Length: 531
Image 1 (spheres, helix red, strand yellow):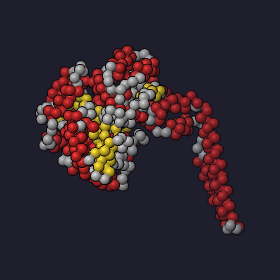
Image 2 (image 1 turned 90 degrees about the horizontal axis):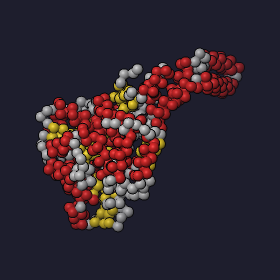
Image 3 (image 1 turned 120 degrees about the horizontal axis):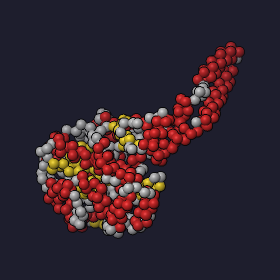
Image 4 (image 1 turned 135 degrees about the vertical axis):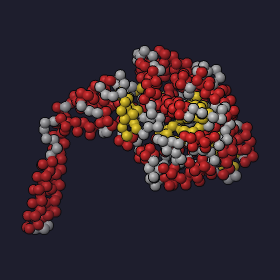
């Protein structure tokens, strides 16, 4: 039986782009765009920089206490919220949209990594306190991304016609959705408990962000995780100076464009800034704000502001202004005493565009940490791999290439016609010499016939392999089945699957198991062998 955990470098998985690999390796092409090492961060230096920055801790604590009203919270969550008033308390943060039913498996990985890094920092720097925070991107309006969940090969979609920020949407139709999930999951020791939890979250809450807050608190509150919903007038008010500057002067467009122009020499740019990187947010819409002459207009809405009315709107209703991806991180780091941000490859790709923007507004840039990635391999899959004589790392590549190499390795026939290719090449080399001696114009004819002969050998080689595969039908089918199970839709498991198929059997112990295997500052892709 395999060891309970192994790993593979990110660059060898085939599922991560060069930017991620270079980020972890601190390659000279990318290193100037982030302040601290992602694997060995100098946390003392980071804490010192954050301590020197002004904070609005009272406002943050008040917003959190208001947000948690009516929720049953663990003693650890209560203590962590209270501790945020202390100037020696700092946060470790991850961010994610309120995908229905938490969306992808990596949602749990990000949160658990945040919890573990905060715990490790507490142990290392006992003079400080560190609070793990899940920052909910509830203002995201991408329902195509947020409104579905994938379970056991089935994509379960929330059919709603609502528009605007997903966090503000009403959870209509969730009775049927939860029933579909119940039937899809089947029986497990924790099935009933989980379905009851989903019903309480989505059927007894007014909107998706409240449902997500409840669900995340129930699942991770025992670890002391604090969930922050930034769609809050008190918190938005703290960001008014930056939002005003954005609307009046559009500095972010120029600053981030300068960075992306340099970055694009080596990498694909993740997010391009707009002239104004703010949306206007209502209960049913989230639309761009654009400058038109001396006024500001909200696209697709009958709303227009002068400089005076815009200032009035900022002061009276800051919650109606919503930062896009360019300003979101700056907002996060303005309202939180944060020292580290844990994000996936896409998030890291846009954060590295922002360092100079942070410097412009004199906001300390956090440590950027790549989220942990895992593949969980069940015992049945482990046994099949052993029978086939394969290592789990073999499955990261193209499945048909693996099938071909497996057949070639185990067949008694000679399927690779190297000697035949060599014989053909020698034969035609001799024919070229003869043709040249007879008539130089015949050389092209010989070359053409050579190409035809080589193609014929190639076709024969393909037919030999195809015929031999039939003798290994059971094994090749097993390889394809394993690939499909562990890499659904040829994607990483964590990017498709949801936590629930594991949770119904293991309950809270599932998260404990992941937490145990996490290394928050790892530069390796983890493989967990489960029972």
